[in-house]
Image (spheres, rainbow, N blue to C red):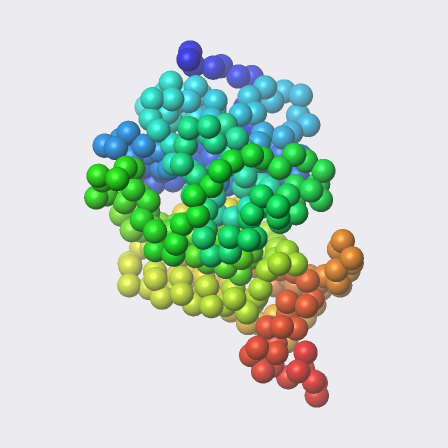
Length: 313
């Protein structure tokens, strides 16, 4: 396949680590601007892709390259010696989906025919073919749910290029909270933690109705324990945050959420969202903010025994 020279692709790319590139889908119609990570392992001739974005959906008439795989295989990247990340598609792909929401899976079909697709095995029913249209939010948005056959993997699963390899591309961790199927990937070789939508900075952390703040705190504590022994560990998220100090970001997000649950952070707004009473909290300075069903806050307060006034709320 000859290198494609688009007027304007739906993606922008930059180098994040020695082996990994950050691709941002920057002008999608959903205003999600998802972060996609591409880790190149040349010794095994393998590329690990973490999430696949919104499928290039855009209203910009100048965007003439919307397929993530075509972008990876044909568009020259200055920080990759001026060559495409996977020139001519010669390296094989492994795709890990941090969770099933549409802005992380709508680009998956280009890889589904010949690539291993890894997802969390924590809650198989949540991402079953019957439930995926609803839980991916595709049904709500009126868009086609992508078709793919995932491999459900356990907590601690090592991503290996092949059965004979001893060098892991990363370890998959079950990190429920945002959704039951949320996962993270720990790349010990580069001390990078990829956490999907568990948290990020400078944009609302959003929990769907199926989320759990009680479980989220457990996940955050486990991730803090993971990265604490590693000097220079960084974190990269599904939106807005990439290559930031892991312990500091995780700790900052936990502090903000504790302030919300324990009543120090005041509700900014309460509104109806698809028939669910929903609340918004925004930290001073706006580094961390939250939108979630009010029920999730009340569950977390009850779990932690938080008394607001004369009631546990």
